[in-house]
Image (cartoon, rainbow, N blue to C red; front, top):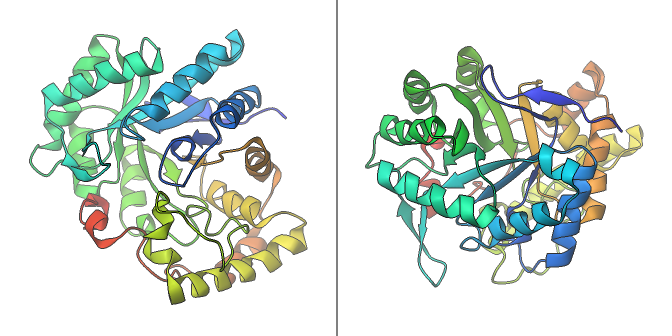
Length: 336
């Protein structure tokens, strides 16, 4: 398979049509297998996936070190094509609690220095604050990233989970490659104002949560037991009646997938791909098996009738429950 590529916005890098979100290999979705994680990153690179996404706070640096290990042991050709997108700014304590975000220029440069060391790279391809710091103007945070670009430590400025007003202010400060934000069949809030804004400004989208943390993958079941170290054990969409209603949507989607001879995950990813070449889905595959399934979405073509059937099966705003617990929703500038 020859991997399709897209340019992130009008000023960003050329990347693979699918990116690999690596968070689940280290944190928030229960235990993961380190060897299988490294093998999955290698398999992604060998398949032509160039974009690896992480955050410096995923398991307190573990995820960056994991990616660094995978890059060191990858083939020279694979290592050369790899592009790393890093989110920074989240503040955590040794017990794993969250205590806000830090977008001060000095903090931005400090975070970058540690990321470069953990990743074992000489530059970060796209650098973005994970959530808006309400106490620091976005212009100051973006300005600090621009200084890192001028010194060769970073290539492009990205944004994450911010609303239209913040996007405009950031874009007036420096060229913005992309906005990373949750976008899926059951998470479509960006369509109202955020997506038109980034398209007006020539900013790409890297969409995370395209399978809604496995909820619409076709593999999640009512009786699945989640550990205390799994974010989904506390996520509103995975609780009680919400879970039952959401899995009913998945079953409606499954009927369409079966008619096309593809999996539920593949049709859900293909739907995001069909929303525009300016959107690059990040698939959170933790194993080579799930990666192979996700890559199969690139071969799924959805025509107007397919899209209409999907829309009827899973209408916008059909999901039951918020995408994060209340405390975390409060940090989302994109939801204001």
